[in-house]
Length: 443
Image: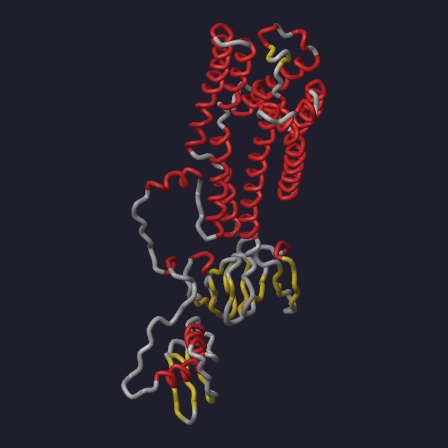
C-alpha cells in the first residue's frame, strides 16, 4: 500500500510539474520578451491580448498545479505552524491576485501604479515559483521512493518459501509467512534459512556475512541458533522455528532502518524553531518594504513598493533547508542500509562528521567478503604450478569455505586440474587423495 501511494504521489507531482512547465514557458516569454530591446512583440501579440493570454496560462498553474501549496499554507496558518509553504502561499497569492485585478479592473489602480500607461502584470512570477517548488517536491518524493526501495531490498533477502516437515515425516513446501513457532523445517545446501530458529538435526556451514560481515561460513550443529535470510552452504539440516514475523532479526533491522528514516536530525528541529520566528519576521519585513518604497521610492512608487514586498516574501522562502535536509537524511540512511551499515537515528548521521578515529572490533567487517589467495610459497625443488593444480583438484571436491579461493587462484593461472582418486575428507583434519599415483594431503 505504501509503495502504491508513493508511486501515485510521484505520478501526480510529475504530471503537475510537466504540464505546469509547458504552460509557464510561453507565459514567461510573453512577460519577458517585451523587455528585450529590438524584439517587436507588439507586432506579434498586442498587449491587450497578451494580458488575457497570460491570465489563461497562469490560472491553471496556480490553482491546479499549485493547489497543494495553498492547502499546506492554509493549514500552517490555522495551526500557527508557520513554514515555507506559508511564504509560498502568501507570495504567489499576492502576485497572482495583484495581476488578476490589473487585468479585470485596471481602473482601480491609481496613476502611480501605471508604467507606460498600463499596470504591470506578475503572472510569470507566480507560475515560475509554483513550477520550481513542484520540482523540489517531485525530487523529494522520488528520493523517498528510492529510500523505500532500500527497505524492500532488505526484505527481499528473506526466503519466500520453506520445506516444512509434517508429523508423519513427509515434507511440504509452504510460504514463509505460514510458518509458526515450533514448526520443523528442512534446509538444503544453497537454500536460505527461512526464519530464526535452532538446529535440531544435522550439521552444516552457514554464510552469515549479511549479519556479521564475516566472509567465512560458520559451522553449525545440533543446538546452535540460525538466523533467517542467512545462506546454508554445505550440509542439510532440520531446524525448529523460534521466531516469526516482526520478532525475527531481519524484521528488526528493517524496522530500525524505517524508524531512522522517519527520525529528525537536530538541525531540522532547529529549523522548525527558527521558522516560527522567521516567517512573521519576513511578513513584517515585507510590510516595511512596501511602506518605505511607497513613501520614498521612485515612480511608480506604490507599484514598486508592492512588487518589492512580494519579492521579499518569495526570496525569503527557506526551500533549500526544508527540502535538502530531509532528503539527504532519507537517502543517506537508505544507501547505508544497502551497504550493510545500520543507522539508529538521524542524529547519528549529523554527529558522524565529528568522528576522526574509527575502531573496528574484528577484521571480517573490513574484508571484501570473499577469501582470496594473497601469497603462495612452495618448498625448494617443487613445481609451483603442479602444487597449485594438485591442491585445486583436491579442493574442487571439498565443501570447505576456503576451497573456492584456491580454485580461483588456479583458474587465474589457466591451470588444468588433474583427476583425483581415493578422495577423503576428515573433519578438522583436512582432505586427501591420490593424483597420478602419488598421495596428496591438504589441510
